[in-house]
Image 1 (cartoon, protein in one colour):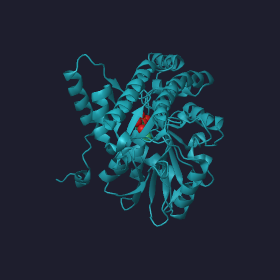
Image 2: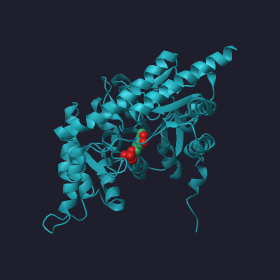
Image 3: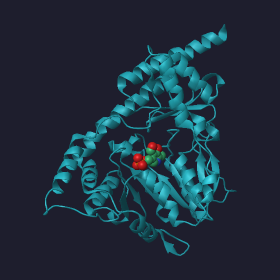
Image 4: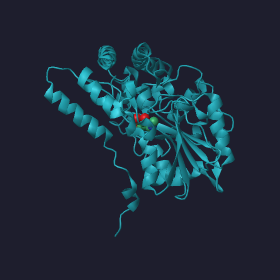
Length: 400
Ligand code: PLP
């Protein structure tokens, strides 16, 4: 027998393992110094009380024959899909509840969606990139092309008319750069996709962090229903990283190559996915209730304030960055032209602060660094003071 030899084409990514190893070595060698982690990609605040109450009630339902639930529907319970459609409506976007598929998270969906597309398709991703888009398609043997996000375009790559792509992954607000597309920029991507008969797989996992007029959904853009699929997650929105729930929206009219994509995805899910558990769907629906939205907003504000504290420190230092607003991520140019691992080591040594070297997210991450706002307020404040001292110290060292 043979294995899928496309796995041989995966580039090993030791980024997070190397970050953990270096951090542990530093902590062991410096037991008197408190290490602060601003590289965390996971939420730290607990679930909202009203969401937990709904989950508990969902568990109790399972105790009684009258309310017990077995296999859920593949695409999610109607009341959850209605709640999500209502949420879209709250920011002015119309999607049908029957266009929504509830899932166990956006990572699975962005990795599994390619199942419905040909292996011969060319996949376009932006660089730097959330690595799942790349690896999932390399595993399936597809060709990847990169659109460059860089300082000149504010880390918001735009399409190149000379490049032909079939599947386009866009993530806005972006992980890792925190940058969010404007409606005008997204319209250019939508027009490009329509012209190329391509499909945009739009990852809106961080839409709840948007605070200006950047679109919360690709479906806010004219023409998107003819060329886009949207995925979203309750992970960062509502603290579901461990609980697991997300959703994917496929417009009913979206067709390619003579096939309806909504029907293909239903067929795929019905074959390989058996749905999200009753207690989790009860909890998910409650996220989108009036009180649920109010309670999750408290946590979102907490992270957003942390992000502003980090961004404020970079403003003071005169360091270029993207994100810090509309996003829990801050993507900064390493000061003094340091490489991203060089800056990692410098910050760890001088400030005992841990971030993520940008080059782990692609070529264009070289010389860049990602900080996140998921730590506590106290630790974030302490970390920025240390970062300021370390960067200013470098300037003084350099002058000597
Ligand atoms: N998409 C992006 C851009 C992410 O950053 C993440 C998580 O970090 C995910 C998807 C995964 O979301 P989920 O927890 O719903 O699988």
